[in-house]
Length: 108
Image (cartoon, rainbow, N blue to C red; front, side, top):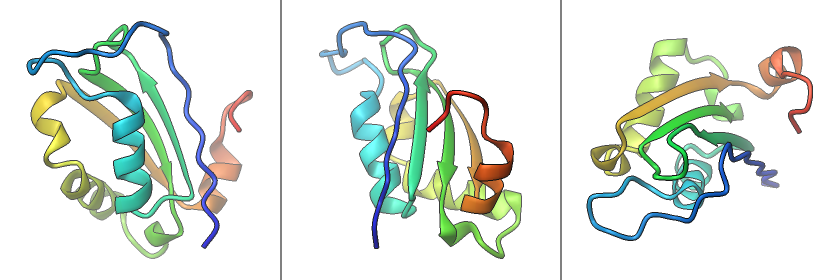
């Protein structure tokens, strides 16, 4: 299995360091890549770097044959522990074919 991973950041702010902070982008990305498993994960930190609000596009062949709700349930189970420290997480869970048809200009 070859994994291609990409991510985008809306901010270059320093990572949070205290226990009340959210989840670092790179840690969340790695959890998603390994847990889903995902061929591609795009993440945007919409919280100005504090790690409490994310948008995502998660691309995985594992989503083939699954409905949208089941895809999101699967991802929610994977990120159950990090979600304790995240205020908001929006996701688009696409198959590779859906990604190619829907990706926006500038996305890898």
